[in-house]
Structures are given as structure tokens and as C-alpha cells.
Image 1 (cartoon, rainbow, N blue to C red):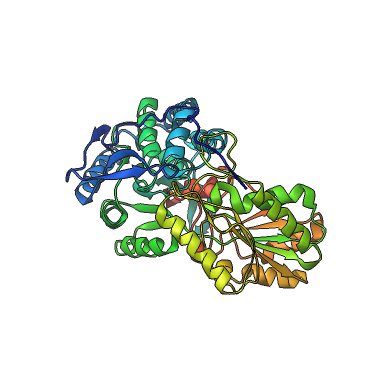
Image 2: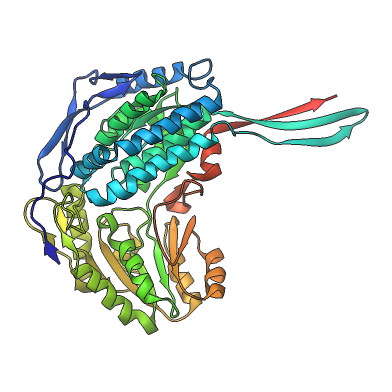
Length: 494
């Protein structure tokens, strides 16, 4: 493991006005409160950002409500909404270096990964749903006659209303796009509360959507602290749906607040994904994916595969490969092209990760590499590999850091049992060259998504979401679009 020195950002960190975006205007919080965005690589301030509260949420919901019903957005023809969202996708692509620099400065993700992966993926979501905006339709069917009366039935899909979206810090622009693009395509209006650790790229997104032609009030951004702005949004009577990505603990609170008003809820929560590696896996091709599943974005990914469940006959090879990847990581400045491992988002999360590493040692897991903080400025930690078993705390709980636990199995039945022995159910990985193994295992895994012989960013054309402690409902795909509509049934007699 090596450490880079500081490098100049490939693109200047151009901070948008760090104010709320309500009704097409950049405004301070009504209380005048602000919070500090901190660069996790340097611990320096990036910006002072307006901290919205309940009154600001009220104003944002009012602005959103004004564009719905008889408003400019929900009544706009779908084809025109699609043209605007397509322009938004173009603008996101054009501003990829700027958006990427903001994300890297605020939460330490590698600039190279963001500019080449995350921001194009966000633009892809807007472009995908731009194509859906004029194709949202119901179903039609002939029904049995009732006496002498003939009957015909059909359904309508109409925009649900005003959507409250609460986004995470680890992939702020990508996840905002997952929520905002289908909601806007369906004709809904949106209020976003971004994470405190990554608000600036969402504020910039608001400026780009306005430039693309989204009417004032159809998209609003209220940064702020969770207990104030987030809770106010989740509990607001003017919200028709809450979509949240974050921790299970906060998800429970949001479900409770939203449930009091019988609002719809979509939750994408935590994960502790298993990587099932069978004896016939092509390890040369698979090991880079297995390592990425643990160490990408410093493990700060809900879909990270940090339970490496490998057949005992090839366990030593997998361990050797993972350790080699970990020790070969270049930890340092996330703007530096030579860096392969950036920062942890903040000191609290760094301390949490180090605490789990200590707990792994205390419970008897074998530490093979890593496990320590790098340097004394910035929030860096070595990629870490343990060997242990599925009952360890580090194998049961989501760490949200670059900490892999290798666990062995003897039979396919045992592998499936280990994979399913968790409260989470977001995704799983299967590595095998045997199609019979792959297709027999997939139906048995209690997860929302299975990756086979690889891993990556979810595609907007397919649903994404989990079960149990990993959430409720689906984002992306047709399912994610229809989640922002209300289905109405019509019985027609003639």
C-alpha cells in the first residue's frame, strides 16, 4: 500500500451558490443557519451551506405543489417534458468535470471514477426517463357482459403528486438522478433534501435543470440537517411520496413519519452483500471484480460485497488475490490520477470503521492486511482483509468501509445458507462458469439483484432495490417510473 502526495484538481472546484433552491430562486435559510462542508482529504472547509429547516421545507413544498395539478409541469405534454429532461442529460454531461470536482471535494470519491462513471450514469438516467415521459400508459381490456350491458375496462396512470426525496452522501448525483428523473418524467414535482456531507452537486443539479427548462418550483433543493430538514420533509402533509436512500435506522424513522399520513414510501437502505465464489470460477477474470466489490469508493457503497463466501478448495487463492489488491492500493488525494483509494467521508465514519476493525480482531478474526488509519490529516484507512466466519460482527453488520471478510463453504447448500443468513437483502454476487450452478442458486438468494461474474452501477432500464432491512419498493426500470404514478381503474358500460 502506497500513499500519494497532494495533487492539483483536474477541474477547479467551482462552488455553486450554497443557498437553498426554492421556486426557481437561490435563497438563504429563513433562520439564517448554515453548516460547514468539509473536504475529507484535507479537513479544510469547502463551503458554508444554508441549513434549511421546517419553514424552508414548507416553502419548497408550496412551490412544488403550485406546479402540480393545474400547474406548469404536471399539465405539460409528456413529449415536452421528455425534451426538457433530454436537455438536462446533455447539460449534466457537459458539466461532468464540475459536478465531479464538487463530489470529490465534499466526500472524497476518486475524481476519475466520478467523471467517467457516476456523472455519465446520472445523465443516462435522465436520458432514459426522457424517453418514457410520453409513453406512460395504462391497460385496456374487454370485460364480461353484465346482463344486457357490454363492458369495457381500462386503467390510467397519472402523476402521483409532490415527491420528497432524501439522498445519501456516497453517490449524490447518481442517486438524485434515480429519484428525480422518473418523478419528473411522470409529471411529479420534487423537493430534495441532500445529505449534509454532499449537498453542493445537488444544488448544481438544480441550476442545470432550470437551465434545461424545468419550470420554477418543479424541482427544489433544501440542504439541511436530518433531524430538522429531513424530518420536516418526511412528515409534511403536502408530500404525496417519500423516497429515501440511507441507513435502516433512519429508514425506520421516515417510514413512521410518512406512515402517519398514509404516504407512499420507497426505501433503499443498507446492505451486506455476499459474494459467492464457486470452485469453477474464473479467478483471473473474477478477482478484480471481487476486489472492486469490497474496496470501490472505500467500501462506502450499499451494494458492496464485503462477505466473500468462497469454496474451501480455492479459498487460499482468493485470499491471496484480495490481499494483493489491498496491498497494491494507492491511498491518497482523490484528485490525483495515481490514487486508487480515496477518503472516508468524515471523521465519525472513519472512527466507526476503525472500531469495527478492532471488534473483528477482538472476536478472533484473522487480520490479513490493512486495518489502520493512513496519515494524520484527512480520513484515510488502509483497505482491510479478514478471514473468519459468518457469525462475526464484521460479517453481520454493515461497516460502510473497505473491510472484507473471507468465509469458506463446502457445499452449494451451505453457500446459499450463509448468503441468506443476514438481515439484509439488497444484492448478491455469483462467480461460476457453470450455468446450472448459476441458475439454481439465483432463485434461492433472498435479494433484489444478483450480479453474475461481475459488478457495476445499476442500469436505469432495470429495477433496483432490496428486501427486509435493505428496503421497500424499487427504483429504476419501469417499476421505478410507475412508482411515481397513481393507477386509476375505469369501468365503462355501453
